[in-house]
Length: 412
Ligand SMILES: Cc1cc2nc3c(=O)[nH]c(=O)nc-3n(C[C@H](O)[C@H](O)[C@H](O)COP(=O)(O)OP(=O)(O)OC[C@H]3O[C@@H](n4cnc5c(N)ncnc54)[C@H](O)[C@@H]3O)c2cc1C
Image 1 (tube, rainbow, N blue to C red):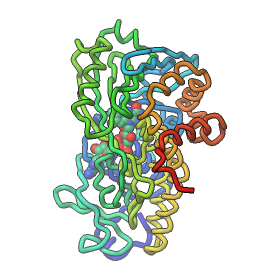
Image 2 (image 1 turned 180 degrees about the vertical axis):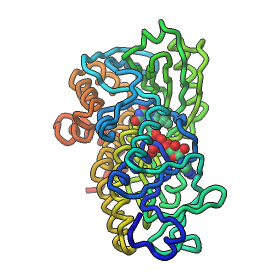
Image 3 (image 1 turned 60 degrees about the horizontal axis):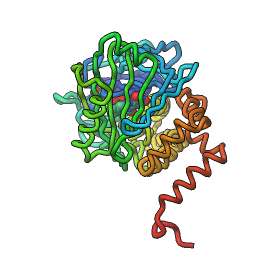
Image 4 (image 1 turned 90 degrees about the vertical axis):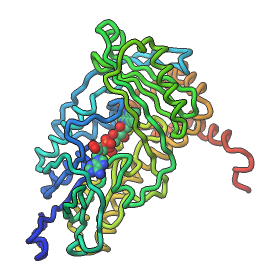
């Protein structure tokens, strides 16, 4: 807790940093602020472990952003990928080295929270944050933020990190703007040993029938996570895609243990990442790869940055200083994740129009498969490949140009 507490603080506890939401973004933020020696409170509306609709694919950048000493609770290691295009033209590519790992989210998220707690963060579960106040009667002074919980209790903080997922209340307070919303549907399907053995170490990625859609099978031992994702607004078609996908794979006879859906939202390029003493990260900030909708690494990376910068916001003596620190956070996010998102958006546009080309390139052109393996392992990023490989840069730019109709082109 701050050493220079006001008299109001003497009567009511003021946390240095309060984090809302205990997913990967929130646990990362809480860890980062707690290892910096600050008093941190992590608020979560669910009881832990909680289920999250997610494939649980852990690519290199996610693995590299875990706190020191964190042992991934891997359910499988992926060595092969079968690609198909709406069920046709299936081809499997293999790798001697692990491409990426697969986790069950309840287990993974709980373990991240335990790391934050070990670093000193305090956890409260079963509490829903209803609103944020940075002015008004609930706020004792201008250096304090009030979080009003369901039931009326108020929690005070010098800085708040909103990590409350894609339907974020804190994001609404900050004014997060999104320009892409997708619906993901998933089924957790327990399967007999013979079926599980067939999928062990291998995932399936199917480029789907609706623009920008795709499906996946991620094996987790005795259970397969089978899902699809597509633009929101096509709920019935997305549901049909999942049913047909499951049917085609011969899995329709197995009763799912969980069937669920979840929206993913990508931020608009000019969307804010803070307001006053409140920062947002992860899904709450719309930070997620627009093409693959990979979000765990975005949550871990932005969460850590948010935790680190929230410490400085908490120390800020006035609004100008708090704003400066918050802008530094936004700059750090935009310089890294922002660049990755803008390349991902371009890739999505290409993929929406020409999934067949992408399928052909990935399955038939060795350098493209190599790029895929390098990206999933984390030795490079798509943005880095486009920046440094003239051929990749030229190919994406040519696709961009082809997609810009003459009346959209800038006049000379
Ligand atoms: C179908 C699907 C499959 C996906 N597969 C993958 C994948 O394989 N790999 C990958 O990297 N990404 C994947 N993603 C994306 C990934 O799941 C998210 O990007 C990631 O969970 C974001 O983490 P987060 O911590 O920001 O949010 P979340 O994990 O959503 O955590 C937010 C937390 O905040 C809590 N909360 C919400 N509101 C409140 C409140 N008012 N008060 C208190 N607590 C609150 C919630 O209970 C929750 O625990 C997938 C997404 C979908 C939809």
